[in-house]
Length: 126
Image (cartoon, rainbow, N blue to C red):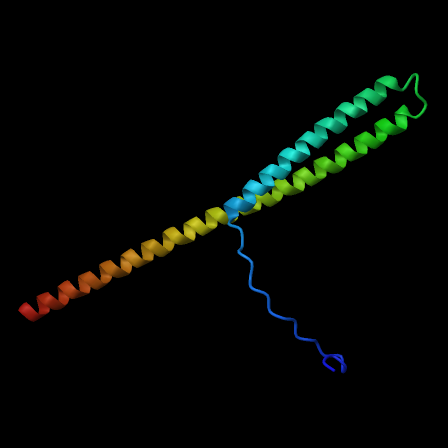
């Protein structure tokens, strides 16, 4: 049987999925950041409510601390997503610059070829 000697079994090839563009990925991250912002606000509000009940409710302080921990976790997730988004924006800029450079090179090559053709024409006429 395949793989009996410790070799890898061949996996059936699946068609490659369409990769999202950098712009699509950035938009998805924007949505996730917005969702996290709402969760941060909610956790903050809940923590404030629990702190206000601390004098009358024995478990309120623990619940407030739990809300603050969740808020901090959401903030870390948001910050990580924002860093990822920054990297993607930077990559998109680099791609645009590469395209501009490629266009400039193509234009310079075309200009060089045209100039060479003109020089050859001048040499033939002379």
